[in-house]
Image 1 (cartoon, rainbow, N blue to C red):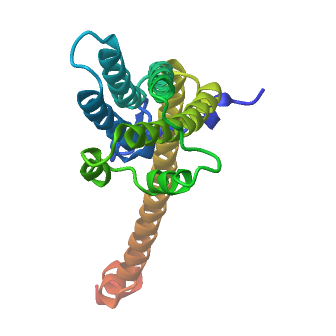
Image 2 (image 1 turned 180 degrees about the horizontal axis):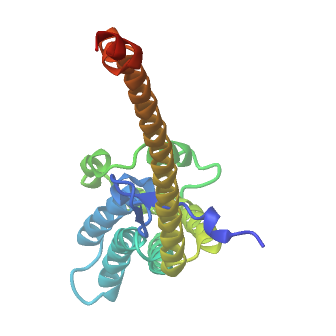
Length: 254
């Protein structure tokens, strides 16, 4: 049976220790998050300018839906480092809130007799190109006070569609990762197994080095003994040593 833990991408600390945490997602760099931030501020401006301050629950619902989209993306991406289940759930809520807001803008367009810019509408292409090429709030802010309600509503609809498309693809990718890698328990198991394997490999490497060093020490000991033996042989062959130990010479002198 194939070891599924091998498919899990395990991160490591600087010292090589395995980590159960997934790679951190910098959500502020995600374009669908950036657009959700634009959409939130656009919606607040839209409600302040074109909807009554009191007596209309639509204002609170639209602002809350826009905020929910942005905040659940933030929380989902942050929680995803430890829990992919939480990430998928929160990103699903973000997508639902975004679609709810999209429906509110559709309702406004239809109720006030405005035209939605899509298809062959001459204003559709420039709007979609602008929203596709720009995702930062600073690019949109100067336009909020200049555009009328039809223009702002269509811009919001365009942003909602782009957020939904990108968010859907992101959720699908995370879902596939979850099916392959599992949740935190699977990552904990895989991280421990990898850490143990690393420790075992380190121990085996150290054992091999110790064996090599032992062989080297034994070789050096034998070499030292051999050299000592040669030295003793040389010393026993000196002329002074031979005269002192030779019986013939000793008898002659007597």
